[in-house]
Length: 565
Image 1: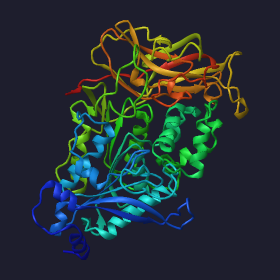
Image 2: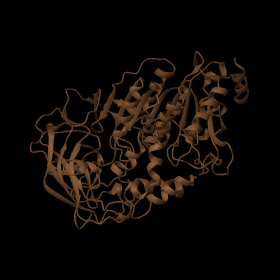
Image 3: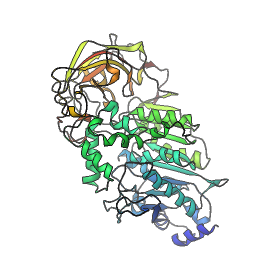
Image 4: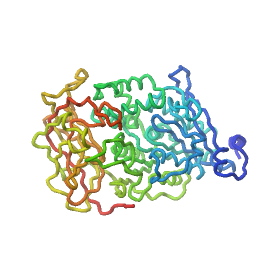
């Protein structure tokens, strides 16, 4: 038994046989980890990071074990000792929120022989529910210079203080978390080659394409994110994050040019910034990417880009794309209803987490998973090796010229009924056809003389169109996967000779008689100046008026086998 193990055994009790609750209580404690990155709140050269340590039963027998490092979503806090004792491992069908389902796997992992460190990101954990003040400093929104350095300090603490299972001195370490707690994982793996396996869930590859696609701010989400951190959770933000929140919450701002502090902030705080560095070599890491097809904050494109980049580094990289994730859009006619569960056909994304770590960190039985599984609905999934952009085989013509305005072509009254619908000339006649992939638009978008940009001083008097994929079924048109993508008249790709623009990737099972096409909006909730899910009606795109001409290629493919549960 090592000296470290002896010390921790003394702290947590002897080797008696205990009940689960007694084990959880005696093998957990709260710790402080000092990050070498400066505390920008008080000027100290280091920052105190609060964390909870959960030791496995094997610790008391002197055995070595892998380490799982976990962190929370935006506005949240770490899993405390009390919270872990109250948890039960969930499944995809458990009646709790998706993020809580993922977090619940910490119980199963500790019981399966893993040590766990769950930590508060800097600036968070301030709501007092853990009986402390959380981690010091102000949030920089997942900066490589701050949050990732903090996470590296957590790894080092585990290596220095725990009796970890190693391969020739290389510790076996995995990462787990959702959303903000998913984003640190691939970035930490980029910085620290000791990371072996990660499970990033409903998170981003490129924060710019996620929060400001084609230069347009997802204001409803951004306002909601800032409100949650500042008003609901009492989080502390860094100076630049506070300025970013101020700019995105202005009633009139709608483009990234209207909130310039966000431009470098978004991109730098992304795995994409590492990919953009031609001198950087991504270390090999095995990744189980869990994502939501109907996630309107971080669309499926983010998971596909992460999969592509991590795969290029040589790791075993899988995607399970399900029907859950960040939701909150209008319901009613034209809606697909509430988001679904974390299943992809018969695959339970939640219970797969432990099996993935068992394979990668304990070298136990391999998990039989497809390269990519994408849910088509709450019961059905499809297994593929790649998700490709659409081709011209299924091309929708936007012709003659269409005009969209914020006052009429919107989703204020219905998710789809007010939008303009342009469909393929042929209905679906084959039962093995699905929507799967990235639509490609080639559009000439122009501002009409009546267009009004509330902030023309930040750039041209830009107009825009919000594009979604629609299906007309049983005389009702609905918006597929709740997803829309903005395209601006000021975009260089929308001139007289339009260049291809990728839209949001979609996945949907098609039925005989469906009419599949394109929905065009002049404004949409996700990009409006009210918090996501508030049910309010925004005003920052009211004066929008644009003409649209061109085509959109739809990713309709044929598949022979579907996975059903």
